[in-house]
Amino acid sequence: MTLKDTLRSHALSHYPILYVVTHDDAEVDKLIADIDDSRKIIEWNMARGLVHFVNKQSMMEWCDLATALDNLLDQELANHFIVIRDAHMGLRNQPLAIARLKALVSKMLEDDDMQVTVFLVSSESYVPRELEKFITLFDLPLPDETAIRQIISEYADAYEVEVTEEAYGKLALAFQGLSRYEIGQLINRGYQQDGMIGIEDVDLVQNEKSQIIKKSGLLEVLTVSEKLEDIGGLEKLKPWLRQKAQIFADWPAARSFGVEPPKGVMIVGMPGCGKSLTAKATATLFDLPLLKMDMGSLMGKYVGESEANMRRAIHVAEAVSPCVLWVDEVEKAFVGIGSGSSGSEVATRLFGFFLTWMQEKTKQVFVIATANDISCLPPELLRKGRFDEIFYVDFPNEQERNAIFKVHLNKRKKLKLGSRIQLDQLARSTDGYSGADIESVIKEGIEKAFVDGRVELDTDRLLNVINATQPLSQVMKSKIEEQKALLEKMKIKPAS
Image 1: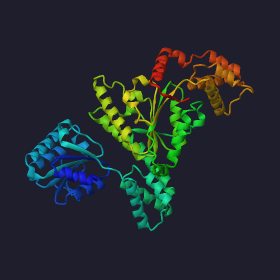
Image 2 (image 1 turned 180 degrees about the vertical axis):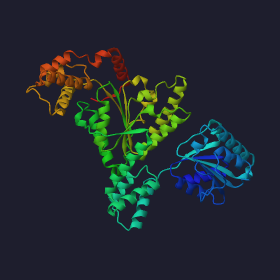
Image 3 (image 1 turned 90 degrees about the horizontal axis):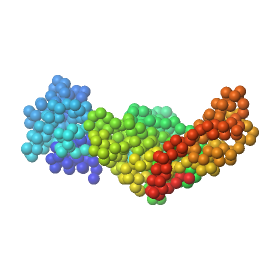
């Protein structure tokens, strides 16, 4: 059943308020007009107050929503649709508007012959508690792959240009998450640049999606250059990620073969052992944009604002798919769940929404969740079906420490290195060191070499730094031992 059929069914069944969440005003106008052409339609919007729905001409001198609803309460409204646009702005912190809308609903419910439906239309949902039982929420769906191909075809016919099947596939994937209006604008721009509609327009689409992310203010786009080769160790995690990269690289064929869309991976374990670096290197490997979600930035001061921000952030991530979404220190996002505090209630609702999305998402958003303290994570997040796999990153073994020293020394190409730095000796001397500890040792060694007269960096100088360093495994010994015991008990797959 289409959204139009669903809305028509609800309207005929006397549901009083239908709330459509969308940014696309033109699309929702067409949808409402097509539901029942026998209904008269009155609209209120922030810009002009009460207006005629079709031509947006003013019906009376501008008025706020509370005044408009007071006016409507006195009118004969049989066989009407009432559209309240920008509903979140008209209702938020407006108790009189909420009370009058509730009074209008009561009037509608008292008389079955009125045949009146209120449509709240907004870019975000805001549901006052007083109206909860009267409101049914809907999201206006974005065009799917079939609809996108049809849009491309319509523009190709209008411009009288040929579009290859490869271009159809690439553009249909790139346009996912955009509205019909945005897709049309981008096709127009691409055609104006070179007179064609083709694969070369994909870069234009990605640039537009970057703008969507920046304008949202809820996600951060990271520029990354890190590669898996820059990470020492993790020899079980790396092949797993390369397998997922192959699927993303040839997704149409993988989907036709029956492959499910990759959901993501959770990487837990010790601080400074490469979890964040892996997230960045994964985006490079997949050749996809990396988005970082800061859960703290989603928390709002109004009731329901945090949940609305979470929905918007997820919507933005899906709009720019395919992409990699990195949720760093995910355990801090859902801390306090079940404690009974007001903050716990918000965290619980956010957690529930995130879990449902992870379970049911169909868009190509590959989620990388990283966590230091697995004991703080709700068990529901760890069960199969949320993520494709969970990996545990431990402190590197001797062979991995050797590789980490080599990676960090090779990165510093301008460095004056002693002719015989003994990597094996350095690796043996750094038992219990994290990758971050090893990098810190090299940086400190370089500083000392400079201060000592810009001499070569050699094994002895690095060993002196190591002997003076207290690694994280010693500083947080008891906590780390607890973590290791818990991870071993849960039988989480090691990354190395």
